[in-house]
Each structure stands twice: as C-alpha cells, then as structure tokens.
Image (cartoon, rainbow, N blue to C red):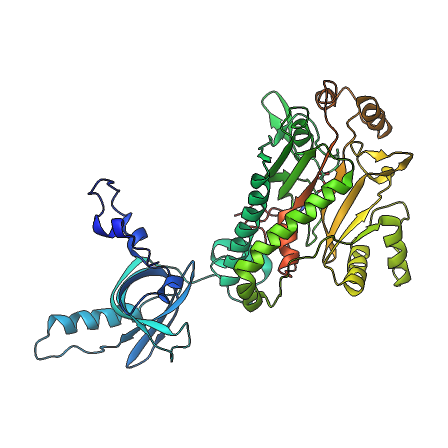
Length: 473
Ligand code: AMO
C-alpha cells in the first residue's frame, strides 16, 4: 500500500539477507502520489517533478507530479532571519523557503513531510507539509506549452509525455495488450517473434524499405504475414505476435506511420474467415473489458470519451453492399472495383452506429482483384475472397482472412498477381509438406488506440512516431 514493504523497511540498503545497491532505497521508501489517499496522516516521502509553484508572501505551494498523479506540497514561508541570533530550525526554514522560490517548472525533487488529509484541499483532499526538499535534477525552461503544435510536441516528446493525458494513453495500451495476451495465453496460444530483416517483400513491393545488408540487400518486414503462417506447418497451432512493422509510405495522413506496432494472430483448423472474425471480436471484447474496468473514469475525465465494451457479434456487411449503403447516403466511393476510401469508411461507420448502435463493423466478401495472392478464394466463386476488414469508428484497423493452403492453387494465385514463384520459394515450401487450413489477422495498435480515445492522429497514440519526415527523437 505505502510502497514500504515490511521486509524492505526493516533492512536498510546494502544489508540483510538481500543486499541491494545504494540508491535502491528510494524505490521502496517513496510513496506514489496515488497511494497517499490510503495512507494515514504522518511522515511521507514523495518524489517527482515540479508542475507549478505558487510563491505567496506567507505560504508557498508546490504541485508535485509523479507517474501516478499530482499532490500539493505546502510550506509556511520564512522570509527573514532573526538578526538576534538564529536558531537552527529557523535557518533551515529560511533556506527551504529560498529553495522553493528558486524552483523551476520541471525540476525533479524528492521531499519529505507530513501528510495531512484535509477536505478543503481541492487537489485530492490532502497535502504534504514540507520538511525537507532535495533538488535531484534542475530543469531548463520548458520549450513547449499546452498550445504548442503537435509537431513541436513531437520534437519534445519526452516532455509532452509528462502530461497526464499522454501518460494515460500508454497505461491504457498496457492494460489492453495485457488483456489480449491473457486471452491468448489462457487458450494455449504461442507467442512468436518473427524477424524484421527480410530477404524479400512480406506484403507487396510497394511501400518497401530496402537497406544495405553486407554485400547485398535486405528489406524491412511490412508484416509478419509469411512467418506467422509458417507456424501452421510448424505445428504450433495458434500463434500471436505484437511487434514492429515497416511501410515506406510517403503519405502524411493521421492514420499512417512508416513504423507501427502490429498485433497479429494466426490460427489452424478454421473452416473459413468466420472463425477468425469470431476470435477477433472475442479478443477485442477482452481488451475493451479490461480497459473499461481499469480506466473508464480517467478516460472520461481526460479525454471526454465514454469507452464501452462492444457487443458481439459485431455487424458484418459485404463490401459491395456497404458501398451501396454509402451511396444511398449521398457518397459514391470512387472506383467501383476498389476498397473503401476514408470517406466511405466514415460513412459506413456512421450508418452502423445509427442502425445497430455499434462502433465496429466487419466488411466482408472482398474481391480477389483487390486482395493479396495468399487470401483464399470462395469455393464456387473465385472472384470473392474469404477475407474481411474491420472498421472501428470510421477507420480501418485490421485486415483478416482465411489463407490459401493448397500449394497448386497458391502458386497459381501468385502467378496471376504477377509474382515470381521462384522468389517466393521459401514461403511456398511451407505448403509442400503438410499444412492445416488456417487464417488470421493483422491490426494496428496505434490506430485502435487513436479511435478508442477519439484522438485525431496516431502520432498522439504512438510512443515515438515515425513518418516520412520524422526520425527524431
Ligand atoms: P494490412 O496491410 O491491412 O494487412 O495491415 C493491417 C493493419 O495494420 C495497420 N497498418 C498501419 N498502421 C499505421 N501505419 C501504417 N502505414 C499502416 N499500415 C497498416 C492498420 C491495418 O488495418 N498481413 C496483413 C494482415 C493479415 O491478413 O493477417 C496486413 O498486413 O491497422
């Protein structure tokens, strides 16, 4: 509760059965701000950075923030020393007052003092009356302000992340990913890490990063696609991966990055993409349930968003029908043979929200002409694939499909798409020695968070964004 576990408090740093290096002690003795409410009045140590200082004539207030919240520190100001002869206590109080007056925004400090619960204190109904203050590291004047542009905030991302809103994004992400992992692990899925250095393109030749690799060339993985499929003939059954994917996409949109975290799943023994969709929605329910349970109040407070757990089954609409619906709302998706465009995605989401009260929709029955060679085509209707896109609040967050596992058909489909079976040899080999029917999906983490928190760009929901003109910090 207090961060001061019995054993740690009793055995000072460097002694006892578990000697610890000097400097470890504060980890155990400091109280996180969010833990203060549950502590009784009395001595505490807190550490964090200075958010504001209110230096009034008679009293000084510091708002100290740490990774868990903010607390008010208070100090009765001692502005002058008694000329008659100074008591030690008074000299210390005078020095503390001077020290607080000199504190700059962002400075990291450790303080000790007396915790006092007091309902009149607006910030959390408690404050700490200061006894000692140690400046750990001083801060230069901050280069960003609340109204700085997104680009400038990205330049100073480590300072931007100090804001509670940004801090919460990555707590929500942690909770969400943990719930996904728990869902999979409890069902005996295997976690894999596929290589990101590749000998060939993993998705398409477009948007491919090429790099020098000793005497030759290598490519950055656009998706774990081939190697998550490899787990099927490898006999792993059901696998998942959360890892980086790279796309040399030159566009500047709110939804594209050149490096992003891809959440991938691949499972054996499916009958069709319907089985993948059923798992996909169950998985999302697990993720949203955990986020709502842990963060609903904070998200409402900081983002003004009411996150809810989606009902299953999610609505499913064939792509052609979705385009008709969108057209009946007055928007015609350009190019009848193409995928939905961004406005089409917004329109179909608006329709689904109005009609079914749902934030998600699976678009199904994609034409073979606009899907990769590895998607299985419909039995008796090869113009259609066993695949889907998942749209959430107006934006595509995922693509999934049943894969073609029959080698002859796979080779034909690759050729038809103009691919060289020789170059794909290593991948095609996966299908020559026995393989179960399988399918899976890939889903962009930052996109999903952006839509969950109603943010306007994945720059906000990516720890460090990478785009055509951003490689720093
Ligand atoms: P796809 O190319 O549709 O499918 O990608 C899957 C999901 O990844 C995210 N995504 C991106 N996020 C940020 N920036 C980008 N440039 C970017 N590109 C893609 C999106 C997208 O829906 N191998 C297939 C998946 C599969 O079939 O298993 C694939 O990569 O959220």
